[in-house]
Length: 244
Image (cartoon, rainbow, N blue to C red; front, side, top):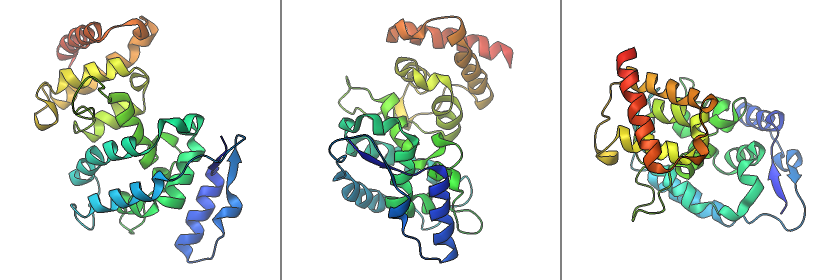
């Protein structure tokens, strides 16, 4: 399939032009990748409408590091993952495609979620700079790595709160590459689910996350079953408690 992408330079140029009030034909900066039929895009309009509808349940403006922003992402991640077809294939792992989506179709969501003191979102949240900071991508990957297909509510783990937990300890580090380990970590930290409280204080969670992230050099996490991962997380948590 053929799909549209923005380079970091193109995305930055479009955003800067818009913010300066200049006219810009963003279609001329789109780079298409792949061959054959165009990638399906029928999900875009309905997903944008659903996200905008969800935003109406939250304040019109969010303060810096506002907990309401994190609560929005907890809900929105499930919507994003459920809407975007898995059949998109390689596009789902191409930062350029996610930059294109955010800049061309979801800028109103990004600007609202990450508005700074000047009312403008840091362009990193469009995937310019750190691709894993792209708002739409990080919500999608959050749901993808925590999806529990055995549960009635497959996104119950996705809704577990904690910006620091998701951003710093799962999405941006090696731990996020191992779905079974992610689910074990979330289940251990929040035994009562998304409505409950974390069983460990923040400083212990951070130490535990560091330990889990280093395990790849010693063991093959890929071969671990869920029960093995739960035991591993529990053992490392006890060590983390002693270390802080």
